[in-house]
Length: 217
Length: 356
Image (tube, rainbow over all chains, first blue to last red; front, top):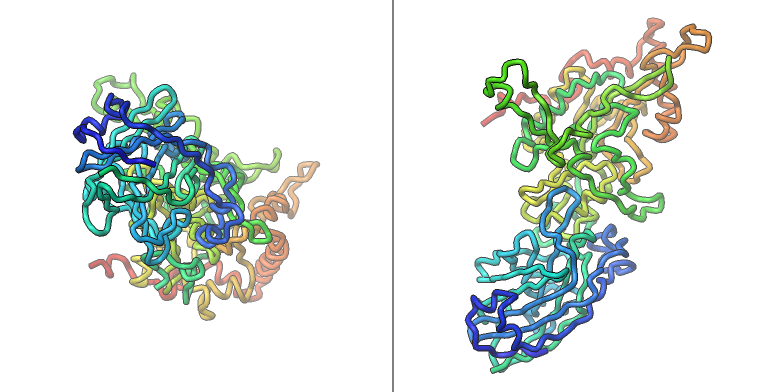
C-alpha cells in the first residue's frame, strides 16, 4: 500500500472526519480469524484459547495512510457495533492494532520471534484517546509500553455502524520503536478485535503476514 | 523460580518443590462467614474488589458462589482436553449493593425511611446477591437438609487458569505451589476466569486486571496460617504442606483417606480437600419415626466429591462408632482437633507477633 505525503497538520489528521482524509486513497484489506484451533504454537501458549472457533467476526479493514514529513498517520475503518465500556465483568471492548517489524526477519503471523521483535500500536475503545505501544517476540511475549512515552496519539469516531480510528506517531522516536523514513518502504499488518464477540488476546481477525508499504518522499 | 518474566513453557510455570493445602471439615462448618470476613478485610477492600470474595461460604444444595459456577464449564475433559468456560457477571459474584445510609442516618426522616439495598448493576432492587439462597437447601419435607460449603482457590496441580493465560501472568510459586497472578503481566483478558471450573478468579473492572486468592502467601512465608483458616472459630480447617507425613493434614488425606477434593472430574487436581458431610440430621421414615439414616442423598455427595465419597463416609461412620463404643480413633481425634495448633503445625506463628 501507499503512505502518501500530505500537507496537513497532525491535529487535523487526528480527526477521522477531517476533509483532508478525502484526498487520501484508502485500501481495503480482507481480515481473517487468527488460526487458533489445531495450532501447536497456540496450544503451547494456551490450550484453552486454542479451542476458540467463533472469533474473527470482522472481515474487512479499510486503511488510509499519510505522513506530513513529521508524523505517520493511519486511518482505520471497519464495520462494528460500538462496544466501548466494560460495565460488567463479562464485557470486552473493540480494538484495532497496526504492527511493524523491528527486524528484517520478523514475522507478523507469529507476532515476532526471539531476537526478531515486532512493534504494534494498539487502540481500544475504552481508552480511545490513549493507545498502547506494544512490543513482542512471539506469542505470549507481548508487553504493553507507555503510548505516551512513544508519543502515540489517536482520534476515534463511531458513526453509522462503523469505527473510524486514526493512529499517529512521529516518524522516529528511537531505536526500540518502529522507524519510518520518507522515500524508504516499510512493512505493516493489522489486527481487529470485536468486543461484542468477547474478542481479546489471540481471539481477533488479522490481515496475515507483513505487507509492503511505500512511504512517499 | 517458577516465575519467568518473559514467559516460559507451561511446565516451567507449574513447577514447584512443595505444595501447601487445606482440609475443610464440612461436618463442622456452621456458615458463620468469619473466614469470608477475614479474607475480605485483609485482601479485598480496595476499589474494584467490592464484589470479590476470594473466600466464600455458600449453602449446598444451592446455586453456590459465584452463582451456578458448576454449570459454567472450564477445567478439562477426562482426556485432558480443555473444556470451554463462561465468564461470571457482577450479579453472579454477589453484586455490590449500594445502601441509602445517608438518608437513613442523616436524612431526618425518623422511622419513615429504612435501610434498603440497590443493585450496582441495575440500580433497581437486587435480584441476586451473596448467599441469596442461604439455608434454602434441598430434600423434601420432612427431610429437608442443607450444609455449608466454604470455597477458595484450590491452587490446583494442573491449574487451568495458568494454562489458559496467553501472557503467562499466572504461575505456581516454587517453594509452596501457591498459584499467584502477576498484576504486572495481567492484561485483563479473563481467559483464566473462563478456564477455572471453580470460578475462583475475579475480574477487577477498576484496575482492569484479574485477582485471586493468594493463600495469604505473605503470611505463609512467615509461618502464619492463611487468615481464613486461622480465623475459623469452628476448627474446621487444617493447613500445611501436603507432603509432611507428621502432619494431621497428611494423615487424614493419605493414611486414613477420609478427605476428598471437590469435583475431581474437573481434572485440575485441587489441593484443598473436604471431609464430606454425613448424618447432618436423621431422616424421618414414612410413618414419622426417626431412622438411623442421614438426610443427604448419596447422589448429591457423589456429584460433589466423586464415587469415593461412599467408602469415605462408611469409614467415617465406622471411626465414629469406635469412639461411641469407648475405643480409640485417631481419625476422630484429628477431626476434633483438641489442640488448636496441631491443625497448622509449621504455620502456627501469630500474625501480631510476626508483624514488622
